[in-house]
Length: 122
Image 1: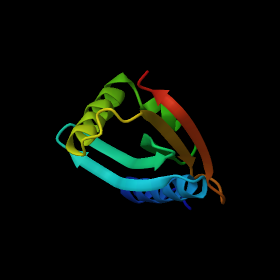
Image 2: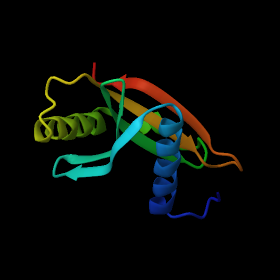
Image 3: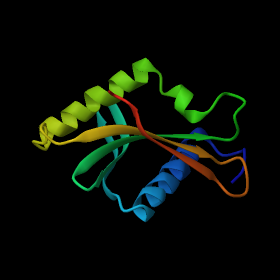
């Protein structure tokens, strides 16, 4: 991967890597890029009856900070509101869930993946 990718290309590649990472660990991908007026959830996955709402942050180095630092309170609130709409739409309001961040550093020849389970949301 190179530093000349557009933001969209980098984001898509990061989401593909994050989805593969989750699949390898026994998660089932339910949705990708689930959008509503309140925002977007990059990946919605399930493992052992637990719904996992994942925010994927791709970076080409750390000069602008690590990916999780970009998931500030404002972004967290948007993700939580969007997740609530998902839970309502699919009648899953009593379902256990958590909010994860997956950081993808694509600066090197081999992408580095850091999964942060329960990164926010209580």
